[in-house]
Image (tube, rainbow, N blue to C red; front, side, top):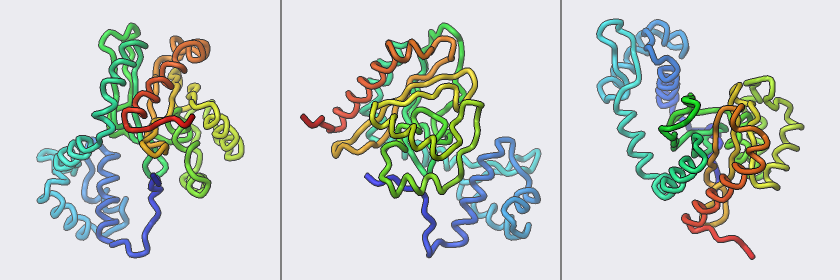
Length: 267
């Protein structure tokens, strides 16, 4: 399965591109944004921006706060998002395994896919009796950089050479914490190790105080389709715990999900 890297087509329709940009900006402003400010961000006249918003509002993709008059994302997107998630057989097949993994480890479990050089969370399981009371900032639908997360490193480590090169020509390696790998040469060498060992560790590279270990999920053809991770506070998810317990747990669960999807290991 070839993972889309968001290459811009030559025949991209300008109106669609503008609508996509508007929706992205609205998503980045959960409190809403005025027509004036939005038109500035999208570099369009206020009148043009207002016409686009009016159409999107009519169709349910955008809504307007009656008090502030600011525009926000509409509930039609929630409906479509839920339909999409419901169509992902991966979530359905993986659910019992993710729940079991979270119960056994007493840590938060995530499942993600790669889309346009970023990881997208498609499932998350938190145990109610988490002893630390810590709640992860992650949520279903959230995007994160691939290079700074364990799940992301697992996914990009299995990209074909051409797609991996496209990744490095993309948005750049943003420094999320002091531990983030931001040197392309160093990251490429690191990804070779990740691919060879079958798992990746996020050693407080994406968020301070949070450590993760992740493994790949393969489809029936053997290609990597997603990744799962065990995530928790660094004081509990120590490097020793990862090596002695969690590494095995996440790899075995990822293999079980892969087999459920039709993957068979070559002898």
